[in-house]
Length: 354
Image (cartoon, rainbow, N blue to C red):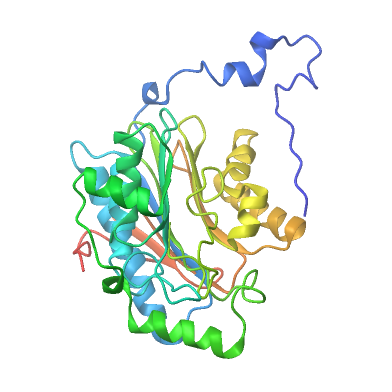
């Protein structure tokens, strides 16, 4: 389904509009989100759009719930921001071997670890990202260092490793990030010749992790982290570290983190596409559905997204078989993994780390 929505104040619809009253100009000078009334914080998590084996379902659900609780605890702390919350939440999943990020990440066709990540804040729309790194356990944290301690947005490979050393991040041996399950997945794809050529675009191996959050001041942030597709060609980079594709954050709209068929997500700039729909008046859930339908119909790509608006409106949607997700707003955690799931539990007593 193709979605076309015009800006309510578009010059197309208003012959008297001028450059100074166009939405593009006004977007630069609205009242600051921080000047709005206090907002109830929320953090929304995804554990990747993928086929999930039955023995991993409960582990993934526990993982995304734990990430949501840790992120929400950060939001409740005296100095906690949306940016702090998404970093903390994604680190939980990077450290959890059930997810394809950090420890437990998928392996390339040549049995190597290549990690990608992105973090972005919505106030000044600053971002940091890494691609093809293998010597850091938490690429989301390295991404934040790049955002805050360099003039760059994206760093790759050995250059990113050198920068990690410069900012004092401990080095990790690549083999320490490899798990038995990752090896099993690689052997399976090799055996059935499904990697890259026929595996990409399917719903079987896109379990990237991500988080979005809005804090009480109305500031938003996103973070996304992945090991990529099992048996990918060495050097392949997907959507996860790309601003506008793997994630996007703008205090005047909201934040999005994506997962799924990376090449398709990049081609439609999915995260920015969804925030564009929100900017034109769609609610977060409507925009999530419309954005994924557009990608499916336009480029035959499948995936999932989590979305939050700058007012705390929430969107969760996926077009794959499964996507583990969770969000916390107040004392209640909502979560699920199958289409139409919306399970709940008290989150106040389940925020312990791994």
